Length: 212
Image (cartoon, rainbow, N blue to C red):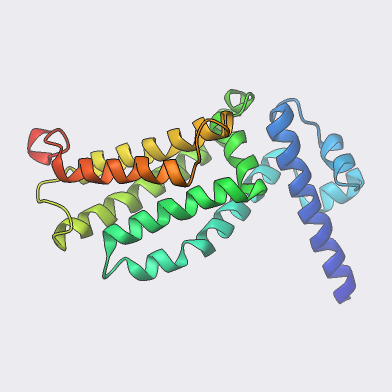
C-alpha cells in the first residue's frame, strides 16, 4: 500500500512539473491535458485521477510554490518581532535567491508575470495570482509599520504606498532578470537596488503619509 501511495505521489509531482514547463513554454490556453500527461509519462486516466481540470493543476502549482517559498521564509517570520526591517530584507533576499536557483519557482514566475504567454492566462487564474501579490503587500506593509514603531524608520511613512512600491520594485527586478539574466546579477545587483530603496524610505518626502 505504501508503494502505491508513493507511486501516486511521484506521478502527481511529475504531472505538476510537466504542467509548469508546458504552461511556461506554450501558455495556459494552448496546453492540452493530453500534452501534460504525455510529458509526465502518464496516461490521461492518471491525470484525471489526480486533477479534474487544468485549472485544478494551476491551483496545485501555486500551492506547491507558495508552500516551498513559505518554508524558506520561516526564519524571517521569527525575526520579525525584534527586527522587522531586517525581516523584510531577509524575505526579499530569499525570494531573489529562489528566483536565481530554483528552476521550478522560475517557471511559475515566468508563467505569471513575465513570460511570452503570461498575458494569455484566464482572468480567473490571474485573480489568484493577484491575491498572492496582495497578500505579500499586506505583509510588507505590516513589517514597515513595525519598523516605524521600533524607530528603524522615521515616523509618518505611508506604509501601504511604500509596501506597494517595494513589491513593484521586487517584481520588476525579477522580471528584468528573467528576460535577460546576463545583464545583471540578480542577487548582487538586485540587493543593491533594494538597499537603495530602503535608503529612500528614510529620506523620501513623497512616501510620507502626511502628503497622501
